[in-house]
Image (cartoon, rainbow, N blue to C red; front, side, top):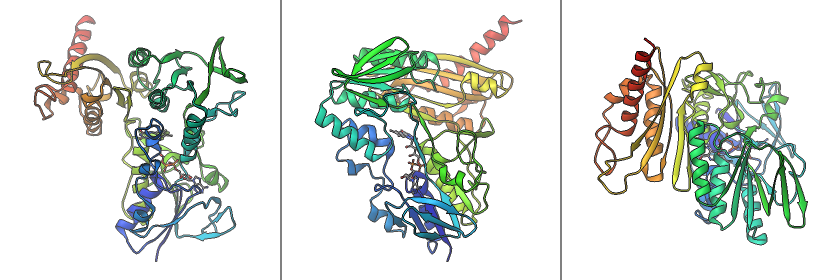
Amino acid sequence: MMRLLIIGASDAGISAGLRAKELEPETEVSLLEAGSYPNFSICGLPYFLSGEVQPWERLAHRSEAELAAPGLRLFLRTRAAALLPEERQVRSEDGRLFSYDKLIIATGGRSRRLAIPGVDLPGVFSLRWMEDAFAIEEYVRSEQPARALLLGGGYIGMEMAEALTLRGIRVSVLEHHPTLMKTLDAPLGAELAACLSAKGLGVHTGLRAERIEKEKGGLRLVADGFEALADMILVAVGSEPESSLAAAAGIECAANGAICVNRQMETSLPGIYAAGDCAQTWHALLRRDTYLPLGSTSHKQGRVAGAAALGRPAAFAGTYGTQVVKIFDRVAGRTGLREEEARAAGWDPFTVASSHWDHKAYYPGATRLELRLTGDRRSGRLLGAQMLGERGAEIAKRLDVLAAALASELRVEQLSDLDLSYTPPLSSPWDPLQAAAQAWERELRREASLSV
Ligand SMILES: Cc1cc2nc3c(=O)[nH]c(=O)nc-3n(C[C@H](O)[C@H](O)[C@H](O)COP(=O)(O)OP(=O)(O)OC[C@H]3O[C@@H](n4cnc5c(N)ncnc54)[C@H](O)[C@@H]3O)c2cc1C
């Protein structure tokens, strides 16, 4: 009987284990998990902290019983301390040895630390694990902070800005980039900043945090001549791969520490696979490895690793960097490349911004959505899209159509040929993404006529 050992029982590890069991139920699948909360939705932590999802147990993708049902053997509070590839064993922190035929490393990521003085003071938090969420929850309940400062205007910072506002806390966001959500083009980031300001939140961009000091009135943050006083500070400045076990065993890792893998998710040591936030991500448009740690990607990579470890044909198709975030009543997202990324990759990108009603304007509740479409001037190929609109405007699903178009290597003009659904309360005969494609074509023709 084949023994598959998996380190880490979150998105990637559980997906790998379930896939292996699905394909070959007789496989012995064991998972070592350092923590106490296997298969919890980290992505849901902001909604627990906002109070919208209670109790915390509801964040479990699956209960321990549901994981045991297909036969996964879970070893909780069992931290893998060393890989012994020669012996095909893993040693846990408490000295136990776990033997395997194939190994999958799914150790995930960790919050990036901000290397500034004061970051370890009480009242300063990061958010990655259930324990982090419990600590924030406990602090909010016991200390009843009136003011919170969020360091980082990325998607976790945005979600937590909303969450803490819903808890009645006055929130300010500080971001070192000139606009919020630096993974989007500046006009969309600026619109999000305006949305937060309209809700009464403070937004301070272009400022790099220098230090945090404890004083009588709270925690003082100093940044480039700017100062703010808060009762709690949340640092949300990104995540980095947790790959120390792999690196110590001599497995090849990229400069940022992410474990190098091939499309079968196999590492540089045969028989050892890696998936999820600890590993590199193949980018389908860039045709190279990147690092895009996302839950959606982790599930897919885990599923591939689970099959490939059994010797089944499986390959990670790659990411397009599709991502979406809800911020109060707005939704922003992207798929594919932005103009400067496309140019750096050798394309001749052309981006057109356009604005459309999400459905027929005569039907109640129509709202405007902003679309930025990037295509290649030479081939007309769609390269990327960004969108911002109201929560009811189906932003995420419209982006998903564009992600599918990217995967099909469609040209921008072919978006108009897609047989998309239409009824006045939900769309228009030309869906906004088709109207945006036509705007892109018009602008390209106009540019060409001007250059003649
Ligand atoms: C607040 C927040 C919101 C997010 N929202 C979204 C979202 O909306 N959409 C999205 O796509 N992504 C989102 N993400 C990202 C997503 O959560 C991660 O990409 C995903 O959890 C990665 O899964 P993973 O299995 O690779 O690793 P992780 O979830 O990091 O899990 C790794 C597991 O390995 C265990 N482990 C580590 N080292 C060892 C060891 N030595 N021995 C044993 N066990 C070990 C850890 O305890 C952990 O359980 C969010 C992340 C955060 C923090």
